[in-house]
Length: 474
Ligand code: 5AD
Ligand code: SF4
Image (cartoon, rainbow, N blue to C red; front, side, top):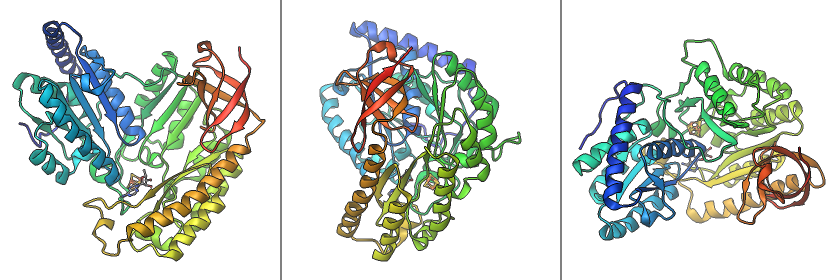
């Protein structure tokens, strides 16, 4: 069992050798079984985790594993976990409990766990004590070591635990199997320095680290050459991109460079912290040809008292000013947000402010959460917790307000013609796509449309999706 191993430089040649050794081992095991080895990955949480899972899938497929149709049939089952709220963690414990019974039937099945949950000591202790049937446990800082850890597990048959408490370098030469051939996520930075008092992310993802702009530009160019037309730039706080880099660049500077890439049609990003959203970026949003009219601006609360206690460093008034500036710069912009209810000490008056601001801001989409205490964060130590029934009741009221607005925004799109990227074919046989502003739409069409941006007339508006008719394509 390895623990607290310090990062060492992983040279590409070493990495290739590990992959080659594993490929051999996997093919020998497949020969013995007389069938290909299968994997199954379940991803919880945010786009960052989904993107990490694409890397893990890339590693597994490079060494010869194939996707399993069902988890029970897989030779390796991997959970990429989320720690943002307790509910996400409980789901994983539930799955691990179930897998214990599967493993009794199929003892050779390997179970691996990674992601934000495992970066917490309290979780690691629990896993070591109660979940001994998990074979490989690793964290967020050493995703790229998965091949090595798997090799160690296959060779020794022992439980392998490898959690680093910090990240020392950014390793990007991983093979990646992307979810969608037309749109891709690209990390521009990792970690977060903000320490919002409710949030576990800075503890499990470490301090902010930006990737050099040349690396980001090269990755985007490569993706575009492979047929990708839409890129989502990922970072916990993209507005502080560039801090700590040797080059003199900020987020808008990076966007300017990406804007010049021929063949790239749509550019999105998330997430922006309101305290760091600059006029320079807003101005660029107004003139960019490639940035989509979509902006995720987490509000968290409408009460200045709560915002202060959340350590957010902006006021309700400043937030509303940003919303107004964004809409002025780009009138068709869709603004989405995150809101937490039931933060410790939240009074009815505080909550009324949240409702009021949510109504005034007219969000196009809102992700609403009941506050969940996370061990180790500042807010979790507070004693003035809000009773569950009160939080739930407030949550219901908030949902009503935000959903009404979301519906209103959808209805406003009726009868308009919008450019839509045809992304895939849904279970209903219809083409599934996204408007520039990220609204989901379904319409009749065939596979020849996939990957193209086509004009679609909006004929039906539901709260969370639209139905459309193809206008023309060519
Ligand atoms: N409880 C509830 N919601 C949380 N979020 C982050 N931490 C917590 C927590 N402890 C929400 C925030 C954040 C989103 C990704 O998750 O709204 O913006
Ligand atoms: Fe968490 Fe705040 Fe960082 Fe977002 S900005 S990841 S909410 S600490």
